[in-house]
Image (cartoon, one colour):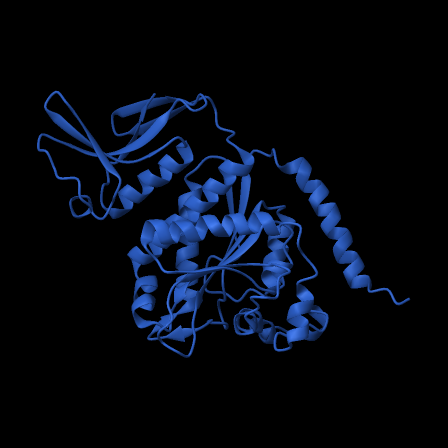
Length: 351
C-alpha cells in the first residue's frame, strides 16, 4: 500500500495542534489573526477605480484598531502595508501563534455589474454549494509564487478535483467557523441593512491550512459601482470593521467567557464610572450628550445611531446609545459613537 506521507503528516499535526489548543483556551490573551487579502503585486480585483487589496487592508486595520482597545485581545496581522504575502505563509502565521481565530477579509466581483451584498465563507465538506469561480479566484494567487507546484503538492486552483480534494483535509473547527460567520453576516444585515448572500462552504486554501476556526469575508462587490463606492469610503470601512469586531467579541464571550478583573474604571475627562461585574446585574450604555432640551429620538438627530434612550433628572435630558450586559460590547458601542462624531461619549452603568 502506498502511503501519502503529506496527508499523514497533516492529520498528525491537526491532532497535536488541537490537543495543545485544549490546554491554551484559558490563556489570558484571545489571539486573532487578521488577514488582509491580496497585496503588493497581487491587487485582487479592481473595478470603477476601486482596488480590492487597498480596501481589504484599510478595513482589516480598522477591525484590529477596535479590538486592540479591549483587554485580553491580541491582534496579529498577516500584513499591515501593501506587500505581497504568499498564500501558504498566511495560515503559517496563524498556526505559529496558536491563534483562536483566523479572519481573512476580501472584496468580491463578477463580470455582471448588478450583483451586490456580503457573504462569508468557511472551509467545509459540503459540495452542494460549491462555487468554483469564487474558489478559483481566491486561490489563483498561488500562480504568482515561486515554485508553486512543489510548495502546494500539485494543487491547481483551476482543477475541480484539486478544489474538492481540499475539503477532506479539515472539519474539526467547521461548526465554530459557521457560528462566527453567522455572527458576522447577522451584524451586517441587522445593523447596516446590507444585503446578505449567506454563509457558504468552499475549498479555499487559506482556510484549509489553518487549525482553528476561520472565515473569509467578502465585504461586497467592487464590480457594483454603488457598493464599491461604499466600501471604498472611510465611513463604509468604519461601519463594516465595527460589525466584524463586534462579531468577534460576541464569539469570544460565548466560547471563552470573560477574564476581566472584578472592578474596571472607565474614565472620560473628569467623570469616572466604577464597574462591578457581577453576573447578570450590570447593564452598560453609552452616554452621547446631556441637554436641557428634549431632543426627538430619531436617527437623524443622532448621526445615524439607533436604539437611543434618555433619562430626565434635575431638568437635564441625558441621551444614551445601546444597552448591553457586556463591557466588551459597550466599549465597541462607545467607539462607534465617537466614530460618528460624539467625541465625548462615555460608558455608564445601571444595576
